[in-house]
Image (cartoon, rainbow, N blue to C red; front, top):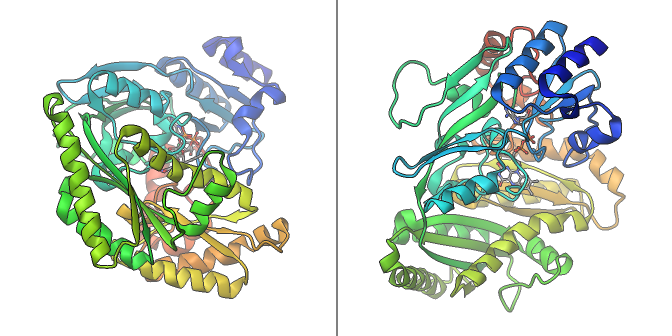
Length: 474
Ligand SMILES: Cc1cc2nc3c(=O)[nH]c(=O)nc-3n(C[C@H](O)[C@H](O)[C@H](O)COP(=O)(O)OP(=O)(O)OC[C@H]3O[C@@H](n4cnc5c(N)ncnc54)[C@H](O)[C@@H]3O)c2cc1C
């Protein structure tokens, strides 16, 4: 085995092969501390050639590999076992090209998402993928999980934002699917197999991404609502009135907003009174710089008038509108802070579900009722990307229950919630993927033909099961 590690060290340089347990901890600490993660070594390649050489070396020694990005994934996809090697792409963090005229950019897989957004902005362009972990997650991880986030309503998920990609295959060959053309009907669309494959089919090393005109005018608001039906009615009227301008529509339960107010320094409730539900709304347009002031005022007026109308119709109870960028950022921070604040509320049983938009209120009614009937005192802490039907239906522990006893009931609670999602024709994993967290749900809810096809695809790409074994495919 030492020979094997020596060969890897020769490829990447000894300082980029980490074997000491204390030093590997950064890569084996799992986000939710739900799964134990260990590894034989962490390898940090510098370029696709090194990735290919490392993969070839692992394949020859029959050592399985866990591709890893920022290690922020929510389903244990980057968790490793003691005998495995983690291949972390963090050193491959170069923006290779921004083609402003073509509205595209080429990046290495280890680029941090926030750096990609900034690079696009420097060229007066916009890369819309945006999520809470953007300061540390990598684009390779975003593509491997087909990440969603707060702008899916208008721009789609990571898959919709990808023109082409490059990946290293299990036998060390390089699949070169980099391409920045928008129309390319030349055979099967292989890039879409790697996107969402969670490191089970290949290691993504670079990608071509779509860019958009930079938004020059923005209007943002937080509104108070009586129920989720009102949120649905408001979303529908806002889309009709603002069309493509609506980028973000995030629903937040009162418990989540109040947790952020209680636990996060300087976070206040934007509204003077509490409401059962809140929604964060963002609309943007990309008018030219000369028009930008007027465009912003016009957009804010449009949002204000929609909300005034919704208040007259008793759809909206109260609203706080941002009048400048600083206030808009404060409203957006509330949505980010409710994620952090939940940890202060004790144990949490988490769900990342989607249902057809019109069924969101029915889902919330049924799921809240079922969970509270099964576990009196349980506190549904729901929030999420309502604009695309995705709710993070998290349950905070009853205050008088032991954390461990509460978490031990996770399987039963998952079953209750996912069964309701299934009845409403939704998905038990909207944007986080399968990893190891949702293998049982795959078995239960995926049809036999899909599962059989997945296994055939896995065998075709990775016949010796070297890439992320035990993930995605039950
Ligand atoms: C605060 C917070 C907020 C979040 N919000 C959202 C959200 O709004 N929407 C959302 O979709 N997710 C969200 N997430 C989850 C997570 O950030 C995303 O899943 C992200 O896309 C993972 O990227 P990563 O680089 O951290 O990947 P990792 O966690 O390192 O890996 C995730 C999976 O991708 C595979 N992988 C990683 N890199 C590669 C590669 N180069 N080639 C092949 N496979 C690879 C891994 O093997 C693993 O299966 C959030 C997480 C946090 C902590």
